[in-house]
Image 1 (cartoon, rainbow, N blue to C red):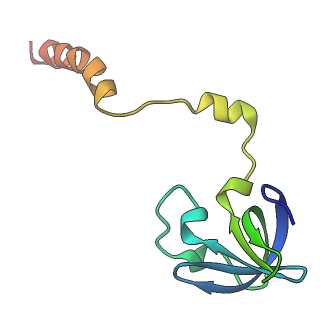
Image 2: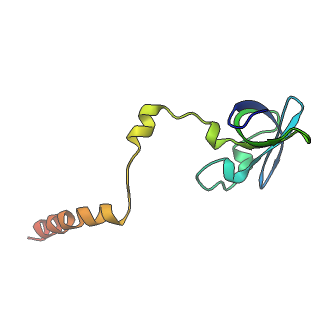
Image 3: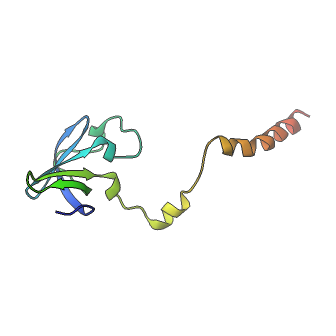
Length: 110
């Protein structure tokens, strides 16, 4: 086994805290924090027992045949998409548009 490789694992169980999988003679867990960068309200809506998923090996123990896996790190993102998604949203964005919006409203009121 090797850290960083991506495996196709079979889902054997689902709990509120993660997904249990098997790969050859290894047993693994994809903790809920390694499923998505977003909040996961119900992990059962994302996975089904018996399905196969790709997961990246975060850590392993050859003696006990246990794997720690990441589903989100195994998902490939097109390089062009990842370059285009560098959008910063927050108070600074609002601050930049604020004067424009105020001026638009002043024109509408006149």
